[in-house]
Length: 116
Image 1: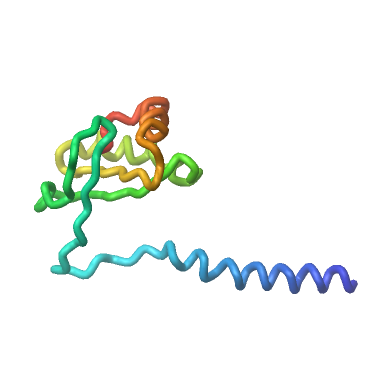
Image 2 (image 1 turned 120 degrees about the vertical axis):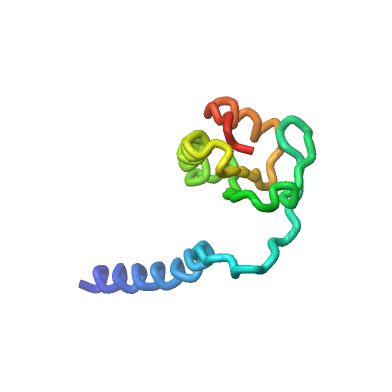
């Protein structure tokens, strides 16, 4: 009985501690009319890019990394979305804090050809 109570208490503590961590991932709409912060980088081919160059076009920006299992899992869906939407939507996949060679290996092995 005492062990069961201890497990329940630990479960409640774990749930309470996890809640705030998950809240950071809550999707919130961007305020209409508010400019986006500057976003620029270098693609896997060494070409510089700037989000401002895509002004006026719908852009889905996805931040990802090879160490992030959910990120890797969603990449084929983003690829399909980019294929279906064509020029109507730019899918910009921004790798976070990894060497370009590592990101490039993943992109190639996953067959991701339509992501910017």
